Image (cartoon, helix red, strand yellow):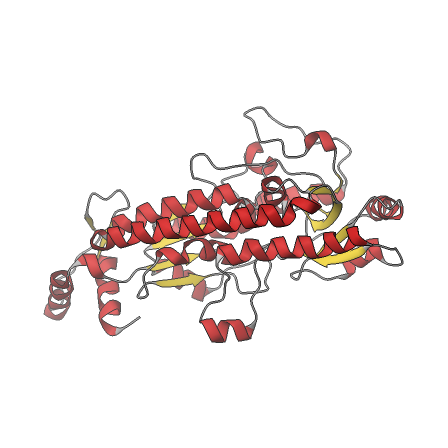
Length: 373
């Protein structure tokens, strides 16, 4: 961010535009020095319509969704580092400073990034959660182990969905951990919902459109450019969506298992045949009973692939696959990027079209090879 943009960013913290578009809210004013007043007037004369924005997001895929909407002068920061898991993540003082200085903060709003809720409440910054958008796709949490076919892809209704009384200690640990992290959002609906909302193509479009509207309010002088960038980005995503549908069509019926159930929304979008997960909570090892059940399924020859994840130890998957004739693939729910990629592009996240296309390649690579054996 250049010196002029930095100056205007400081002024915006004094006269911050409301997200409702009403105009400037007079946040605070001090006349302790003449210099401060001069700086404020100078920046306002430059025009509030041309300043650079700072947007901070909780996880990389959110950055990949909204980056194409921003101008070259805008600043986009990601809290979660590449390769890190959001489960059990803790914010540092530097993260809090970044949140405080942001014009807009985006987060999922589910147990996945519940570590954002308390600081956002305390800081009072402008924020938007994917969970809070109207019309989002929500799917119920599926238990670890083998999934019942009749419950696949059922959307959450207003009625309470009771978990089976036979849930093992892993499922209990999952709810216990997330319940304490997300103190003010512990409703039964929140606990039932699959929190990996960014994996839904439909949800990504809703967030992009919502953020576009807020950016147009924050930068009215650049509103037309933002609208054009938004439409071009939505068109590109739809082309990618069609490309993925064509790629995954031949492998839709092939059964597979995942390390943990982070891919249900992607599976739903492209009609894939996931049949179970090794664990529900990535932080808790599966029970011996669970491992035995899954190994028995693999032995029967009814599993084409078992997928690991780069954020977690491979030994969890090996406990199920060791010594068995089954292909092992890798799925990345965060879009990990290498240090070389970061150095070359200046970004620590993948563009969302690249992210979902990469997932498609990962699914297809393992499933198609298993099918050809």
